[in-house]
Length: 358
Image 1 (cartoon, rainbow, N blue to C red):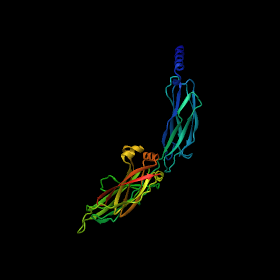
Image 2: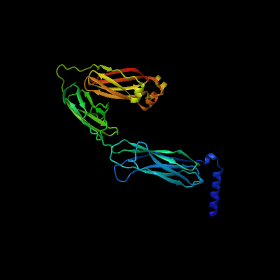
Image 3: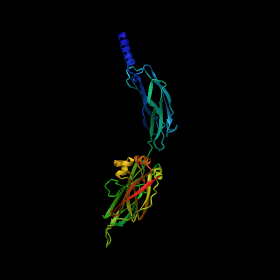
Image 4: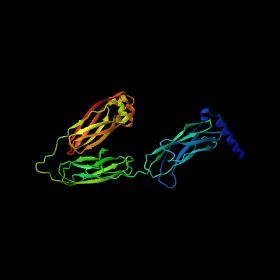
């Protein structure tokens, strides 16, 4: 039996030696890893999978060591270790879990990353992926609290009422995004971005409700409801059927500034309380020229609101594909489209074309 085993091993070794040189190459790689930070107890570990594929005639030593990216020594345990894969004549994949302890804490902070660098002293082994990225996911974000103030709380049909969520708060002090449920159907379909107030008029009498949902950068949200009591209209009341007049103030047309801000900042005016929605994009021909097709031709959207006649400044944040495309051109013509709705649901749509230049 021992003789048979020796013969089989000799034949396997002969096959490996007789194979083409390209088939002899063994490959070493390391995966990425994601781990939740935790707040206490046993430290969690980021587990990177080191994989060796291809036949080997000798043992394969390798080392792995951590390095900071956005994470620091306070966030994980610095690690520098070695391991050895055994001889593998068949070339079947071998794996090893390289573990890095994570330091839990109760601080709310962005997700953080570090590197795990892989190396070997075996010149016959090719390191095809020498670096893994470890992501420490923060789990300390608490949901924000929504609050709605209503002014006035009693009004006639058709009178504009201000619903204001400015007293909403986030435990970590993060900025909030506001969305409103104006028809009390449970769907917060009217976003106003970072604008915390909205003007709205009711044309149905009795107790009316408006819902608010606030969302923090970690996508945690909180909701609240504001109420107003609506009386029948006074004698001689006539419903407003005229769309609001609007104005786009001069726009900075520097492409360099736009890329630095990652968006186009505009000031837009409305003659009364209104909801403002807008988008920025390019036409089909321009999209083909700069490499933006399909949905990517709409480069950004923005929302705001006014509770009375006036103007608002807001920014069309550009998508990543749009920023990459604009970084390659010297000038580009973009379309600014605004859709404005007043409290009586009258709508006005305007389009403006501007040329951004370096």
